[in-house]
Amino acid sequence: MRALLALLLLLAALPARADDRTEAQALVDRSTLTVQEMLTTGDAAAIEDARRFLRRARAAVVCPRIFRAGFILGGEGGACVMVARDGAGSWSSPAFYGMASGSLGLQIGVQDMQVMMLVMSDHALTALMDSQFKLGADASLAVATVGAGVEGATAGAGADIVAFARARGLFAGIALEGSLLSARSELNRAYYGQEVSARQIVVAMQAHNPGADPLRAALMRFGAAQ
Image (cartoon, rainbow, N blue to C red; front, side, top):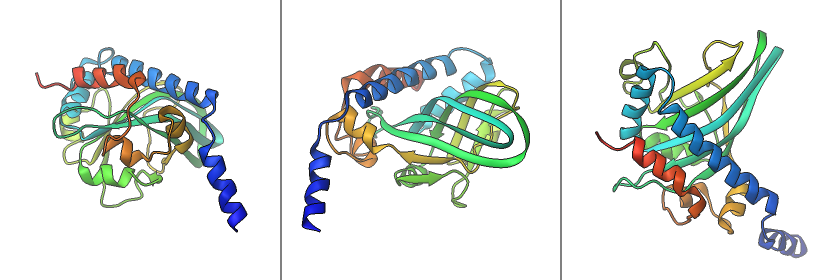
């Protein structure tokens, strides 16, 4: 047992792989572009709704590319980052997550979408700090999806999490129910050079990487009161 524990400690102390660091920074860069695109281009009403909710959001989960494919059996997946805002309005550096789900039904098509989930309550942020979180499984959390043609102020009223998406493909709309968000500790470790939890990154703000400053600046700019 002592030998096993020593081995685990040794593995934890090994330096992060270069490809993990590269993957993490690439995801942060894509997330920055996603924030800029979703809050500046497309349906004007949806953009205004997203900005309005962002100004009040406690945190944001940005998924630059969620790819969904289906023929009878379907599934979706992608990588995401989570950032949170402190009482002074500053945004944290990102924690890394993966999103995955599966479904069974009569469906044919593919969908490639950008997703931004705005966390509107401390209760929801606390729930997302778990290593795994399933959207829709916690009955005490209200999740609303808002898109073009839907009045965001009405659709998201009282919701703990409000999701916006820009999708391309054959599927209509977006369904996040049942999607599983899982922390990617290996990317957190690679990006910050140490073992650090999502809570330490986004709530306590104990870790920082200057490579995430453009993402933080974009959220600050678009989420500023007007």
